[in-house]
Length: 390
Image (tube, rainbow, N blue to C red; front, side, top):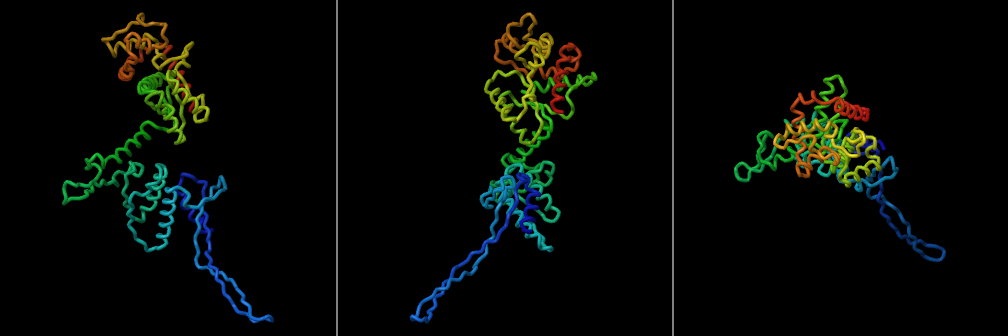
């Protein structure tokens, strides 16, 4: 029991995937039956008597894992391959450390191969604990086994088959040019950028980069006017389209992050069904899903461009596309939404929305000419979003 407690404490100090487990150890004896036959003289002559005896010939260690929630146990081998590897490595290393004079170099080939990303992070924490006493060298193809804040530790190994005398070449990462060798590093860099550049504890999901440019520019402008913009701890995350919003929510939800959606009105019913299902399954509260038409009177559908006065957006559009100049009287007011109205005049399904947004973000003077109504609507958006994150 003492050993089981010690192993459980050490193991679950690093294994953070499920803290509701404990290790149970038991000793099972293997017995062999022996039968001896004796001839006994009795009153009626000689008879045979058999005496059975049992001898313990071996002891077996039984390992089981108990789930404290379900109160059920399973044999260790019935757990995942990753858990078995992690358990075995820690127990083996605890045994090694019992020798106070031990001086080891650990050479590990693809450690934690069966562990998923967050469990590989647990393994790296264990390595970090060991590094003060032991030299550790491991090979990996997994981007999750690369610490981006410690790239000075990384070396690339390249099989230079074209030069027989060189064989495998070990280099610093900055010297490596082979794309296949660099791929795990590139993947690790991409993951690190996604985690730190866009993702924060508070995330405002929008459809695209255009929304990000409009919202960030207006937020900073309003703050400069001593009005309310988005708080500094909120990150605006472009999802790449309404159909990808549900996927982003699922990914961010796994990291226990706060989320609010600020979206164009749905045109794609499939995307709406996905989002409705996520609300029904309590993945995201309905109050955290906001649409731009909610900030306009008497509108059932709207894009972020509709938050501007029509004349203001046309002024921005004409400055971006001077060849395709459109006047306010050219718009068909029977069509709802400035984007659809412009598309109708241009005879296109969808013009490039990003270019006017980029023009807007690079022209500071444009905000000075916005109407009070437009600024009030954007400030109302920021107030609503900020409140949802409190």
